[in-house]
Length: 338
Ligand SMILES: [Zn+2]
Image (cartoon, rainbow, N blue to C red):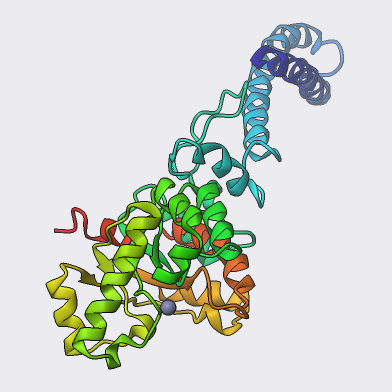
């Protein structure tokens, strides 16, 4: 392959070299004639031929080398090889099978001599601003920041599988805070969340406002949720996120008794509220910071429209990766953090 490309480059380089040499020669002859007259310049002109031949060779080599470099540059930018919108999704799909994260692990294009490729081209969102491009180049190689995507209220049959498909395409993990009654309805979806390596926490059994419940009712709700998750997919959740973020001393005590960690969030784009996809994505990307716990939903009741969440999710993932974030589970945020 390499020779196939190098040959035409070399040939055109030689032609260019000859043209250049010819121009040099004409210029030289004109100069010599004007300086010494036609006859006196003859010997000098003959010497020029020898010199021009050497120059021609050098010029041809130089052109050949720069043509090869141009070929490599073209290969890196060629559609279907690297870059272009939708590329990350397509390639992430190939890598998701073994769970390998997308960033920094791309196969080299077949037959290419280019092995060094900028990682930012993978995660570049479509049409980034110039400042985003600059920060990608600066931060992409070393993921120093972590963020956790979280999805509440599932599992369901419609949105949760779509969220899982997108996460799988990018090879990233998230955390799902699931509702006990939903786990009873869709145990196969809960099992899929588990099998694809995501974190799973409890979001209560009936999605009640547990901050206003008695200690006894809280304990009962937590127990029922645990039972539902265990029966549906053998899960014993160590994390708990309160429905509506509603917390009381009774709830804190009950969580402490059952050994569950209370998890809230610090980035909330209100994705369940009919917020347009572009607004959801820009809110997340503007408010993200190291340790971000991003609140999204994978179900919202029978009439909830989460199409904005689904549409925004690829942009959120690509944007966070481009900003240098490692996307992890909520438990993963705390790993090696000290
Ligand atoms: Zn909820």
